[in-house]
Image 1 (cartoon, one colour):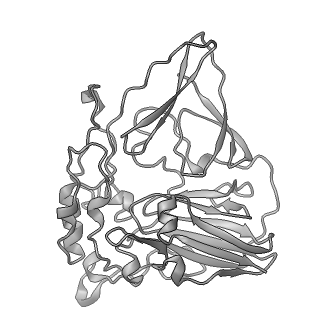
Image 2 (image 1 turned 90 degrees about the horizontal axis):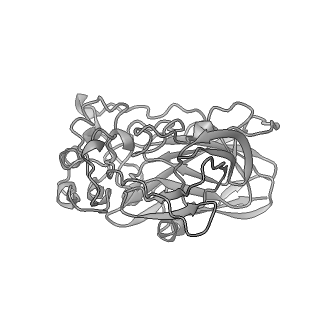
Image 3 (image 1 turned 180 degrees about the vertical axis):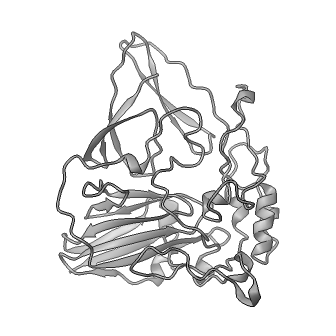
Length: 354
């Protein structure tokens, strides 16, 4: 029942933007201002992505007051388009996506039509066939299982898609036509090895998207495109680009960058004072809040000259997004996914500035 005015992201000032909700990756922070208008209790409601649980806080003028708990929303489904396998929900790769209701005593019959956010059984079976395997369907979570892992059934997609070549530009997925006149996933190869099980065919910026399961119920959702630095600062052009492919294999529980675990990788060397562009391409079916120690990342979200400073960037499935970094802090700095079970499994690197 109240608007929130976002005034800081990761502790850095941004131009005030009024929203009703936002999605946070682990380690992200937002400072908001709220101004209660009535003599009543308001709910501060934090809901898990899969709607399986929530935390409730109370903002009230007096002790003892309790707010109304918001109605549970349906658990979203993730489509192939949401994972970079197609550019539009209208495409044949996303047709037939079904909704999955959350288990609750609340009647959700009026909540149909929400955007799908996990692949249906049929979609996953089709994806397995394109990759030349038959393991996806057997791992598919039941459409009635509450709080189930919406990604578990996707582990069997052994990759047969070529990753984007690291280039200095943002061309995306070049050379996607397959051998023998064929095209599509089945004609591709996964060049990341066993540390990766799929490759996003159509990675793109999702800075203007609220994320799966949000934005279709009338609430104003914060998106990265909304974040604009409060004060202008010098923003020289980068001297080079580093492409980091965010990869994973759920079946073997390997997480890393470019198909490699931390134990298989070398430090990423930066020259002190150097300015680089780092482009993340997420080939997995999960969001990854990527966190850099020691230096801020300038999020390239379209805010020319006013790119917001972030220490954590939540990269959506199938997303390609870039940040600018000025290597102004000598030393070795940790860079990792802030989902610690991913970090522990190998999604960790060291930026070495000298």
